[in-house]
Length: 240
Image (cartoon, rainbow, N blue to C red; front, side):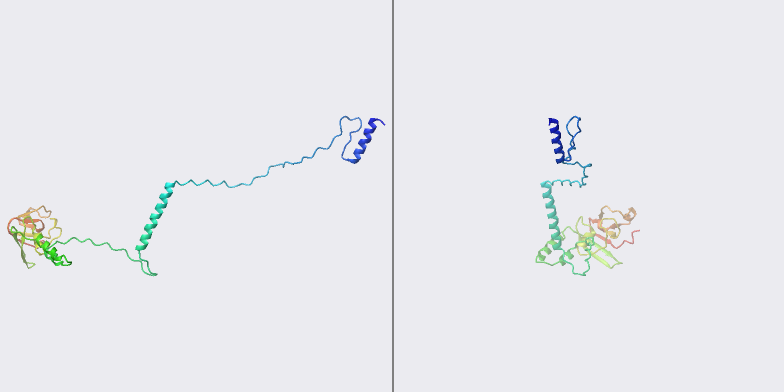
């Protein structure tokens, strides 16, 4: 048996043992072909789709230490004020009506200060001392002039001292007498009177014209005397 025969015999035995082994027919060149190897890992046709995920939130900016301290102090201050207001505000009972806001006090023009009105206020332990002080403040000097004011329609006839430079209206009030007045600044005719005797000076006023002054009308709130004088008062209606 030659070499070729022995090879064929051996290949035949191998073919029986391995049916998948293909033997090239006699005369063909090259070795027997084997089936293509099966790959150990198979790549999928398409890559798997990734699940969409929400973007991560941006980190909050860090607060500067100074700003944080100021914010805490502001909150503490507001809480302190609210606590004080809560202590000062009495709690309302259930069903109680809401209290009305406090009414603003009415502005009243101050009344003229007279010695008699001051002496009537005898409250307090220092009342005697104050009364002496008031009496000295309203004390009439030796140089005071005498002024008489009368009104037949009002049944008035009074005489009182008047210091140099003191208006007739102020002198009357200082002695405890009440005469009509309104503005005390020469802007109305409520305190108008007529000079019967004496020499007087009248400061700037805004209601009497030259005819009134020639008729001897004067405003007692801005008239001072330089001699003893006599006035008729309550002549508001007579000034036309």
